[in-house]
Length: 181
Image 1 (tube, one colour):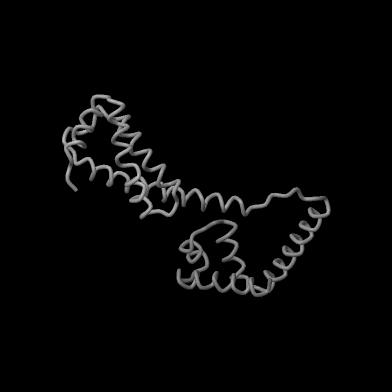
Image 2 (tube, rainbow, N blue to C red):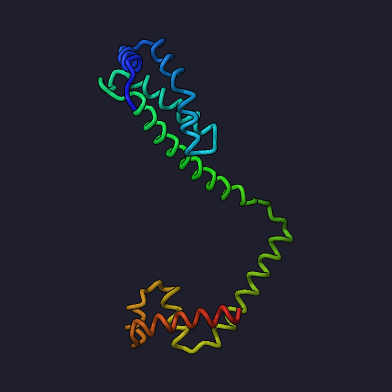
């Protein structure tokens, strides 16, 4: 991609703050850049926003622009970068918004609250019954791990077993409790 004489002149005039030169550059490249941008996204709005940002930045930072630049190459490269950045940003925003949209908040009625409490109590009583069926060592291991938040190394030391045995013991306890619940 080579610079044309008109591109070089427009660039120099833009650096000096000439609005008409800026408009000519925009008119010369906007459609070509849009076609180019649509190769990276199928969202026309993202492509147009990226191109507008390119030209906005050129005008905004015109005094700091390099003297000799391949204008066409510069415009294509910056457009590509902006489109990819905007496309990535739009995907993140979409995935976040869909996560929030799927959450439905509702006010619980008195009956709903009672039912929820009864279910919670029933689960707790089943858990207590299942815990009673575990050995003393298994109950201690679970107590230290989940109530005391002790690491496996410390639990193993307290129970006088190896760390691997401690991990296996707790894993099997949880597996057994899940099965019973």
